[in-house]
Image (cartoon, rainbow, N blue to C red; front, top):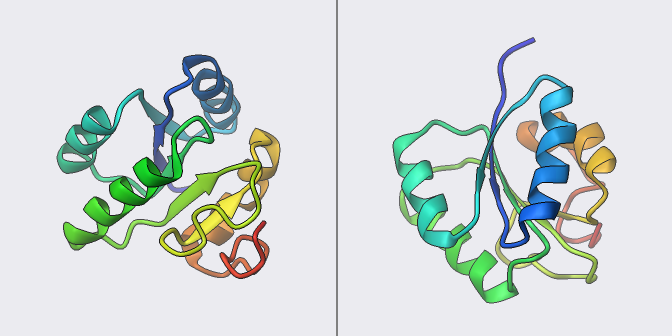
Length: 124
C-alpha cells in the first residue's frame, strides 16, 4: 500500500484528534492543523494526497482555503466534512458527513476521483 498523507484542518481540537486517530490507525499519515494560516503553511511545505476540512470550520473558511489550494495549481482532492446538506458542493471535490469511519471507507475513491457517493451533486 502506498503511503497516503492527509492534511486535516479543523478548529475543534477534539474532533480533529478523533478523526486523525481513526485515519492513523488505518495506516495513513495525518498532519493536523488548527487554523487556516497553519493549513496554508503546511500545504505549501508538504505533498498531500488529500485535504480534509472539518465540520468545525465555517463554509466561508472552507471555500477560502479550497480556493487558495486551487490557486496554487494543486489538484489535491478537498473533502468538506459537514452535517449540513449541500455545504461545500460548489467548491470542494466532495463532501461527507462527519463519521470518521465513513470517511475512511471511501477515501481511496475520493483521491482517485471515482466516488459518486462523495460527489458534490449528491450532497453526501
